[in-house]
Length: 67
Image (tube, rainbow, N blue to C red):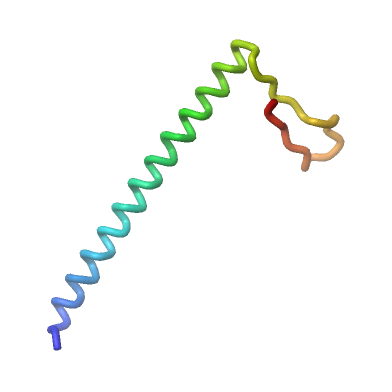
């Protein structure tokens, strides 16, 4: 049986690795979101895409659609 300090150290190592991997995934996702926002902004400025509601907004639950 392992001493408690070894188990705790292993648990802490595993937790640190998990948090690190999660942070990497979040950073990657954030970069992709920024790329998408930049792309949409540039295309909007060029006039190649229009962002507008599909139907007139009558309720707050209406969401814009990208065309």
